[in-house]
Amino acid sequence: MTEHDQVRGVGAVACWGTVLVVLLPALVLHALDARFGAALALQCVVVAHSGAALARVLTDTTVRLVAFGFWLFSYVWLGLAPLAMLTTDSYPRGFLVDDRTAFTATAVVEAGLLAYSAGSALGALRAHRGSTVIEPVLARRVAPVRVLLLCGLTLVLAVVLVPRLGGVSTFFASRQAANEAGGAAGAGGSPGRALAAWGLSVPAFWALLALAHVPRLDRGDRLLRGLRRLLLPALLALNVVVNNPVSQPRFWAGTALLALVFAAPALRRPRVFRYAAAALMVTVLAVFPYSDYFRYDEREQVRVVSLAEQFTTNGDYDAYQQIQTGLSQVQEEGHTPSAALGPWVFFVPRAMWPDKPGDAGVLIARHAGYEFDNLSAPLWIESYLWAGTPAVVVVFALIGAVGRRIDRARERLRGRPGTLAALLVPAFAFYQLILLRGSLMAAMGPLVLLVLIPLCLSTAVSHRAPPAASEPTHRPTPRVPVPRRGPAATGPTARGSQERGGPPR
Image (cartoon, rainbow, N blue to C red):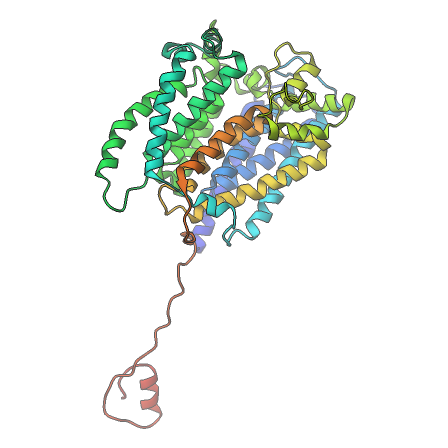
């Protein structure tokens, strides 16, 4: 890297850092009467930490999608939103805590961010070496025949499940109408409808993504191209129906759309990625707060308000307040280490295991006395419920290390089309927002489908991945001078000329 590139990199980091650490927080706090305290002071540290880390990711010389997803959530939902809440002492939910609990909640958030940064740094120490687990999995290549089989199976599932879920029109009404229609059509109540909906939406998403990036066959692919042209419009229309933000959770609809966009080969280049990431951040801050317009049948008039008012009144930004409420629950009931088993055995019916750990979001909502218990439980408080701050540190250090290795493996494999590195990593990077927001119990089922389906679609690759573009593919071979034939000469001058490869003088 030249000196000019280094200076340009420092300038880019400074520019992004100024926007994220200074300008956007100032925009949030504009015209607010600040209520200073220890929690607010520590929250400024959280904003600076997450903003600086996000700036580093956006100015990196490689594309780090997993890190971008993590720091985007941390910066918006646990950085800017709590900053507005602590400044105004106003929260979207009704359950409030004292200043000491608020300070502890901010400290738990920062402990998780520090652990993630440390884990990412440790994962980068051996990043130049290929992973024995992550890289072989991401090097798997989607098989065209399996992709076509999935496309056919998905279309059959659509014919069977769409009428059971209320018909096509229900998917464009509202989430409330979709839930009610699914129950009336015999989808088995809320759990049954959720199972049927995820069993259709996730395969439909993967069928479209895999077919759009299926690799060409070595022995000609005229038939494959014909089937691809035939199936792509049908799968695109199906995804518009089953994965739209009207009837599906916005986080999942956003995951599907962003995975399709960021899987494009052009967005694997750092400069194009920065433009797309900047556009995404603007969308998250300016559009996402108003995207719940279709959640209920009775729709309120859209009213444009400031970011600070959105953060303090919109329940979509309740992550920090849920952490506070979870801390209050721990103060009264203590830690529950057995709850860590819940997300891993989500598929076990409660009838078979009456003492199965409950959903963390539901338990926190019940502790607060809310009538509506389908709430988030950020990974920070969920891991804290297990064993306190040590559990938070271990969980986030592990996430940071694994995320860094995934990003590095994707960079090493970016020259191979049709691999899981090109398709699965973008999907996981943005589904990560659902995992971080919680609860894990609610997110594990779709996550299993999100990972299992591409593993079934792909086949293993025996040879190792080529080194990344930033690494030299080989060492240059030194040129050995070959003396030209000519009349014999003696003396030091002649010998020196022959060593230089030229004729003797």
